[in-house]
Length: 450
Image (tube, rainbow, N blue to C red; front, side, top):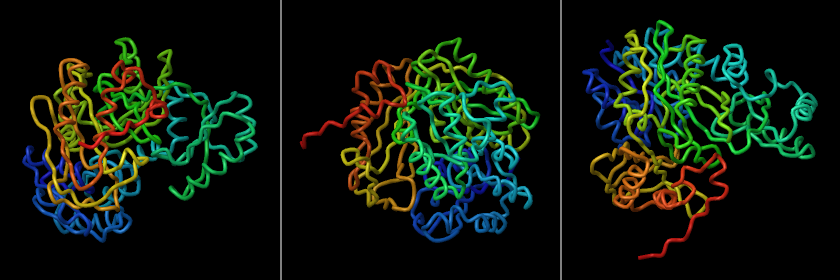
């Protein structure tokens, strides 16, 4: 087992990993930028190393600084969390070259799954259902235009290196395709340094349902059921739940088997997520595979009583998985609390938290790195907390969430708490009747000042 793990990340996920390390008797090392000097992950780790200035390009994305921090602290493993370098094949490879265990996928696995066109081709060969579309990268617009007419509109233009909704454009009419093609390529080039494109048939009224998997060094994998992530804004998830209100026992069995097939086809090692689009007829199609822990992993932990970070560490240390597939025994919902103003187009609101009171009680979990007096820096993702409620039924979990949101007090900055309060009252959400298009019909209602 590892003696010391460096966490190459910040905020709540860094603190989350530190907690499991402590429970396992493993020393932890936090790395931080100058902007994160007062963050809780720095305070609670056994050691902390400053790796650069506020800009992530000069700190959390600076591979040589992180490797240097691991070497001077004699860390024998690195946990990348999510985001930043978590799915960076070069980083995984460099860790291996420095005899530091990367707690995540190998460079080969990341390359296979990180490139969307490559992942699609790999899954097709493995027999996993994929969305109809181009075979690999489209070399020219003319090639894309010809295929779009053959498949029929609408189509989805996608950057092969894309993520977070960047480099994606839905095209409904032939006459708007050239403009959307150029815009998607330019955005992809600016965001990822790669403007390669591919195309898929646009699935109308889809749900975004993902399957959590874990694979070990023997090539075996198991699944830990699903999460419904369909409530999204600009392809960024806002809330998630498990089990999905759209799921059936038969569909879960099929999707779970497909996710295991996807994992075992590349001998995947570690925790990962196979993401699917599911149409209104419950046909499902492979979308992508995330070769890391997900933001929303706590709801899976809550419904099956399973520490996914601990499992990541055990698998990385060579411990085989049980091989058992897990089914949800409870219902869990996560609301992402962001420092954003939901009444002003979700504009980011960094600044100082003057009051912070977290809700509590049975079935309420808070994952956060902030506190009274904490200064939210403007340089990183705006998520400051995850509020998770768990109960015997979906209705009980929603009622518990309503109560917890009412208790959650954050002053000094705007947050998305009012959005989640209104979401928990929306009739379509309450009925489980929502798709990835839900936010296109959702409107924030003004709140009267008390």
